[in-house]
Length: 284
Image (cartoon, rainbow, N blue to C red; front, side, top):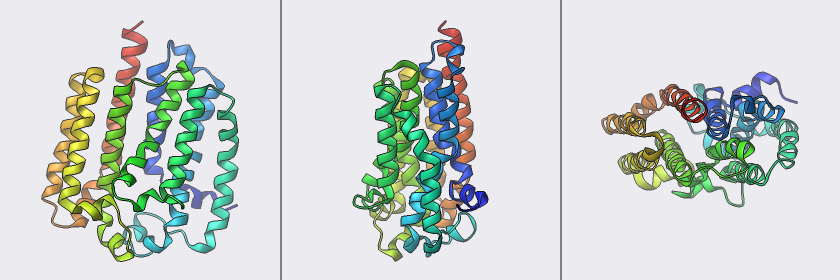
């Protein structure tokens, strides 16, 4: 097994809340009382979506992306470059840490099984063949619905039902925008490696426009659920898109992109407590 430090680096700790956060929001939206959180399943899958799930997403990504990653300056200091010699140990670690949780999920209800299956398929085949969605423009962004699935899972284990359609649509558009924006700094290295992405297909300004449309659509879908806060969140991200237009090159975009984990964590923190208050306190 690889060293734990290596595995943590591969799992991108700054992005851990992108997976854990939706799970927690799903729990808060689906819970009927605070005692619902006192469950072994709730705690166990919080652990899963904190680390093993992230290792799956980014580990598979790194295994299949070496030819592109070795050309990407981002892999020299901001992220870790996984070499072919490290792949076997990484595959073993991913399996050991994920399989027990995957098996456990299939003893839960139908919605949880659906969400876990969707999460696994989207996470693996975003990078892996025969689909390798990350090399199919627009489809690459659509596959980032994988970040919606933990929320569906959390809501499902609390209620046995799917979340409201508007909530899933808003989350889906938000994940599409996040993915597309993250692809802009990689345009040069992806083109050099011959990889087609939403950003190489639309170009810098086309991708920013695409992201803006997705963020706007997400805010519109979320408005019946979040009210004025949906507009506030939308304004935050649309402002970032406007600032990105004036970035002179991909490094300028990358400078803005590096602030996204902090911004997303703050928005997610507020969203969790807003949903918890509306559902468990005000709604009781």
